Image (cartoon, rainbow, N blue to C red; front, side, top):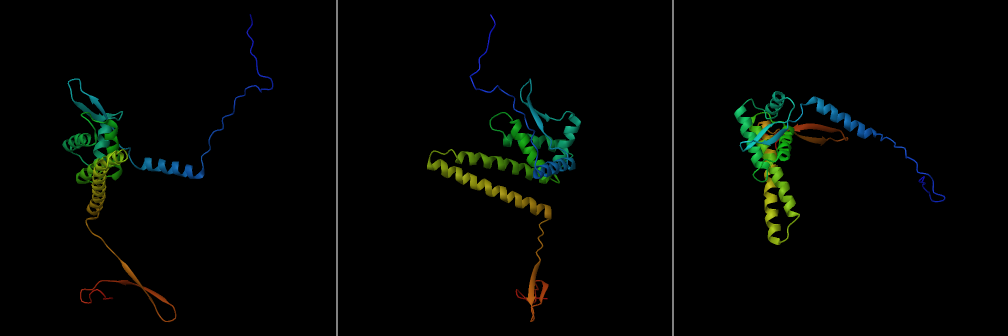
Length: 217
């Protein structure tokens, strides 16, 4: 027996809707182009993969298809040529950002991206960048806890920790900036003198030991 299908009277037959491809705006095109230029100007941030050893313990290694290249990217990102420094700092990062006994691969790779973005120039800057990544993640942890408090005591505890961590991160940023500039700060102050007739003369004000606070040259 032949099977027939029925359609409600007056209902139009189903038609496939044409899919119109999305067209990027000028602003989106510029942003994507700038991103491509940035990617070409810098090597990619290194990533790692975490595996469990058959004999126990955790193994951290480069996630690059070529291990030699991946290792080179890690050395470059951490501004070091010391295998001992690299191995130890990777282990420290794993312990600092992971929750629980096992290393968190995603958390470690996030920290690596933060360090690579800071672009340390030597091992000291790498250590500071590592601390900044860890402090940031701890800060976000207490932001989450503050959003889920149930008592006033929990709220006060989370607020205190959050404030300390946020201040620490700001201090770390200032320390990095001061270290990179050698602790020097140059300030130039200009004064404007308007003479009779409305003509303005711009000059430089310099502090003079003999003239004191109000001295001008």
